[in-house]
Image 1 (tube, rainbow, N blue to C red):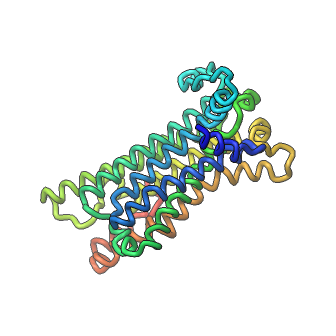
Image 2 (image 1 turned 120 degrees about the vertical axis):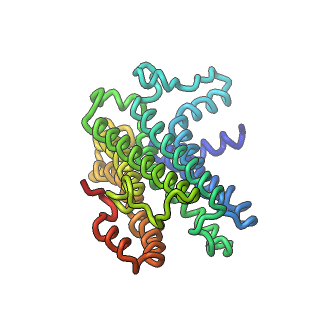
Image 3 (image 1 turned 30 degrees about the vertical axis):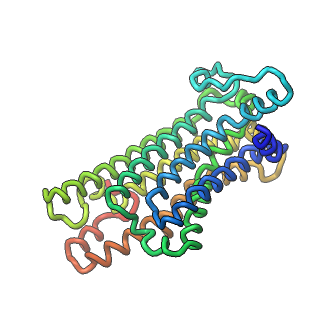
Length: 325
């Protein structure tokens, strides 16, 4: 408790956004470093994606409950009455008095995505025995550690709209309409993107299973959503994060949201709100197009099947990202 009290006091900034951002990002890097050390010693990447999902879940939960945690620790240190943990159901009903329904649903949205993807990737690496992305990197401790820190950065930037939204005090939401167009559009984009990603992953897993069972001899998947886009799972991921950012930006750029995060009256307040929300889908899409997603996959398949006419035909007629109708 003394250590927790010290940490909370050290991060008790005047600005509400910083009060949430700094502890959450610190947790992200701390968790990744904690899993990185034994993984580097064992030269294993099996817990890389699983730890990433765990970090998403942990940082999201911390950002949601941090105000209550601060109040409970402060009350315990002074001997006053300790406030109860907020009711998530009460927040959805509008009777909680601590959390707004947007904060709960957006935190739940990230948690559902992280739990699903983390479980899927962890099961896959256990079946395959390795992740080809780390075949050479894991042999170099500095490079392997950098990969874990990159994942902490990924979590921190992708969670930015959620961290910003969860930093808005409950009272500030009173100045917002019960439902905004950004809420509707954002959650529809999230549901559509998550469904698209999950369906694409399921189709790929079924295809791999059938290939192992020798039910087909295809070398690359061209059925289902994979006939509409060469990377439908990545399109779904970019879309769902766009949805999360859309919900957040509606709050962060409103007058009530600006007051809540301490940016009201500043010349670049609304621009900062857009940046806090938009950095998430922008960073995700950048990674998918320029770093670890599409480039690695395209290179691998081009090297294997680039000279085959059926592969060339599929690649020519199938968009790389946005699905064709």
